[in-house]
Image (cartoon, rainbow, N blue to C red; front, top):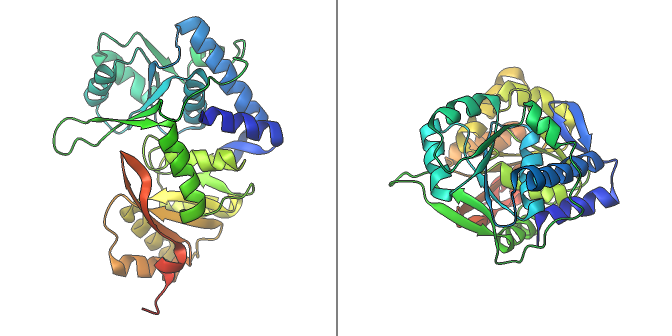
Length: 321
């Protein structure tokens, strides 16, 4: 299953549903989201020769254009290679060379540095704040997403490289489908009025939550800071409402500390899914005490994103044992 087909389905059912937000400002509904993606796909194919199976890197800070780039890649049937924007340009260049990427989407803060150390295989850098990206949005749209089989490569995810060079994990369309369906059954339900907030890097834990929210026609919100700022999130959440977000345990701790300092109760936050490191018992007990019954723990790895086990909110909040 091509996830771009999920976007087509949602845009067909609820074209006027708000989709992309920068802070509290709406940037596009689902019809416009799909139009941009299909045009980008058409332009990538006609102007840059991108075709099914090609690897396309995304080396960008969090922004709504990140989702446009990802879905355009999948619309063509190409393979997304997300790279953490916090990596040094030389580290990103090594990943690009290893994956044999010829085209990369970048943001203004990553593109200049990457240009200086780009490997020979990389032929094109597309800055999503630049004129070439804007021009791609105006191209003749590709009529429909390419068919992708369950065993075909969709997402080439590079590990953190803690014991050597990063290793490319081959995530298939079937992996993504299983993960997305498992989220609904084991982690949390998603409704159309919900919103996913991208505060952690979209190249990793935060970005994989886009699928469930596209399927349900929910909103996608990138903070103005493009990252994690506890005060900003606590102020933005009541304005947006029904927010879900991924957070590492250290982020949860900072969010709780800010809520205590400001007297907030996490208004507007529906679910915080935490993973990526050990959560101390005292810290999660304090988090539930301050922010309420909003926490779900998941565990996974690159080869099985988010799909190994989960601890639902009722278990995280249970004190009877």
